[in-house]
Amino acid sequence: MDELGPFANWPNLNASPSLSGEQSQVLETDTAERGLKDMASRNNALENFLGGAPLNVVARLFFISLVVGALLMWLELRPIDILRGVQAFFDRIYQLGFGAIQELASYVLAGAVFVVPAWFVLRLANLRSGKR
View 1 (cartoon, rainbow, N blue to C red):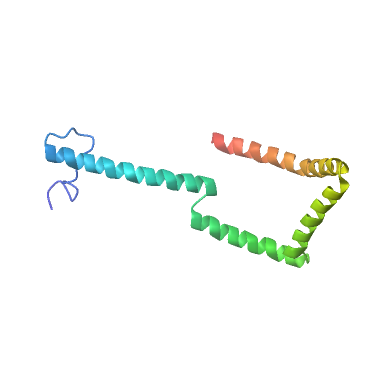
View 2 (cartoon, one colour):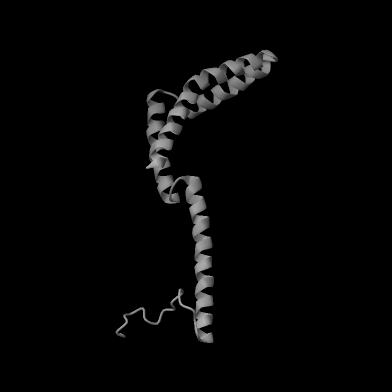
């Protein structure tokens, strides 16, 4: 080993190269770093979209699905019953004709009573945590 350490032969990217061989090494290093940055930005975009590393998100979704599924089975709600309920909902809307708009609006308002305040509280919590 040299007295400068094990990384003495690595190119210094901040210094201006004086030889053409060093210039080619810097260009190769810059190209490789740019490729890694592009790959990292694509990975970061995926992680930003998913909310974390893909395997961690899959594991969290698995356990949350397990808990929610156990709760639904305990309440004796089977997936087929939920699908039949959704189908019945759309069948009723179709059969109502113009009355469907009124029923749809009542569903939206009933849901908004819970969803909008919850959304507002979560936005406030995110706003406060973002300032830290």
